[in-house]
Amino acid sequence: FAWRLLLHPEGFLKYMLVSLGLASPDAQLLYNSGAILLVSIYSFLPFAIMPIYAAAEKFDFSLMEAARDLGAKSFYAFRKIFLPGIRRGVVSAFLMVFIPSVGSYVIPDLVGGKNSEMIGNKIYQRTFPDRNLPHASALSTIMAISVLTPLGLFVWFSKCQDKKEAARRADATRARHEGGAA
Image 1 (cartoon, rainbow, N blue to C red):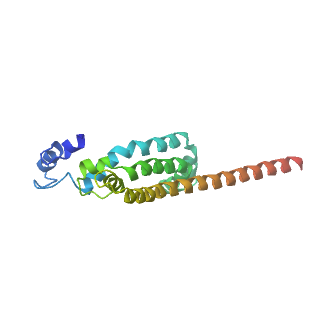
Image 2: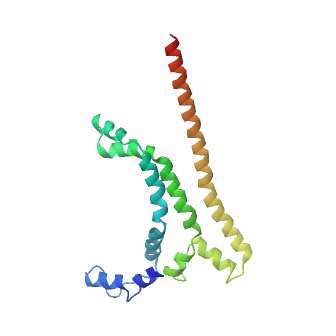
Image 3: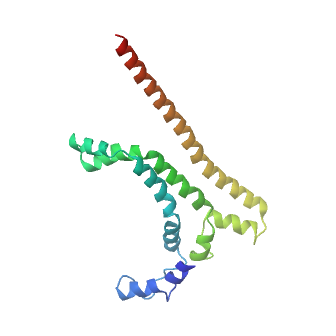
């Protein structure tokens, strides 16, 4: 509701943009896809920041320093060392944002208007105002599949990574024992 006040045709944000010359007086800030995107980012950003922050807090930054000492550029070290190091946090952030955003129907309804086309809105519309429960069920099934597929892929990928890591540790342990026995 606060965003509706800010984005209103006579709201504070529009007044500031017009006075700074960044928007025309007839610009529409409310009831469009840009308003939906802005409010969705505002609403879901904390759910993305927290898992990434938790993963980055545990990251060993001496690896980045070592990569730079060995001649890696900053962006290369970021891409090849830091991002793989916090991969689980990034994937968790994606899932924590993707799952609620797919079913979101309040944000598009409040700031996107009646013409907003998101699956959460359509399920709500088919369920309550239209009373078309078979169509609502079909849309809900599509939404559930679109949420469960990435979740299942993440679990499968995590298990594969864990198996590879366990095999690598076992090989390293075996090599140490064989080296110590010789």
